[in-house]
Length: 341
Ligand code: 5GP
Ligand code: MN
Image 1 (cartoon, rainbow, N blue to C red):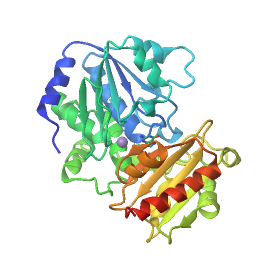
Image 2: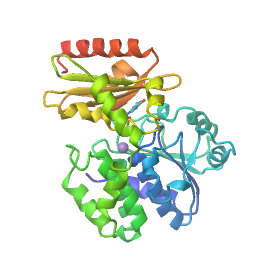
Image 3: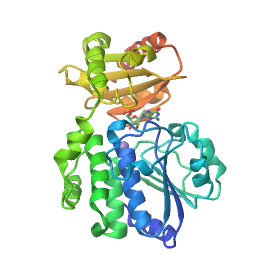
Image 4: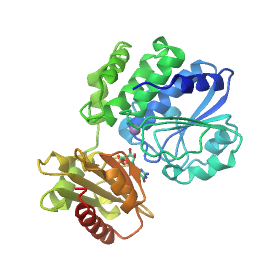
């Protein structure tokens, strides 16, 4: 995969003189969102720009170790108005790792108020919205962090990648590829990983920080969900799991504790689709995973107001939990009748 030179030159042009820059990523930010934002912020700052990273809500506690993560502004609960001020004075707004404004929740209204800033998309999701001054959209890229590394390489050279940038970029590449195991990996990804490792990052430590730093409550919640809440149907090929607010409270739930649960049913040999439903204040969050040719991006668009990638997608439901699960089972039947499963 190559990023078009014309896009890089457009970006270079935009960044010739010091700019006020806002870097935005999506609600429920993950390792790829945070990693790409922080690495991009660091290289832009060292090139003389004034940069703020903003996310709609808090990222999971186990990503706190990521270098400079304490500099990220959170829109939800921001009482000092720092996010509003940063957006208001931005000359350029970078949108990283998301493809529709609906993934910003309330923060999208704040963005709309600034009509003078240039908008740039850097992302790897299918079907991005179109209203950008510059779109660096490559759905074939395994992560936004990989895209970001390619951009930084072309724009400022590999020498500009510091150890802290490398650590941040590595987290996104590792998490979005399921530990370098998904079909999205390419030889060039490993070339880039080798550049990162050469900066002196310690891969086992990063791995431990991301995957072995959870709370006791999370481990117990995981056992509960798999044992008590996983329903397998459609001849053993589809599974769904759900968590209500009451159940989350019972296990001292912290934001991010259920990340990754949705992958687990796919460890069963026959399984083709897995879904996880988690209750939030005014909606139910839907998380979908599939194997091989089965497309949950289309499924999420059609039945859950969402989207994403072919094998990992998500959306929202505004029905009760019971009705949501019924709707999921009915939707699976319909999708299957059409030959999609
Ligand atoms: P996760 O299940 O990890 O929350 O999300 C998997 C993928 O689904 C994300 O990378 C994102 O592309 C997509 N996704 C998750 N939630 C939504 C949503 O509400 N709307 C859209 N359009 N995509 C989503
Ligand atoms: Mn991503």
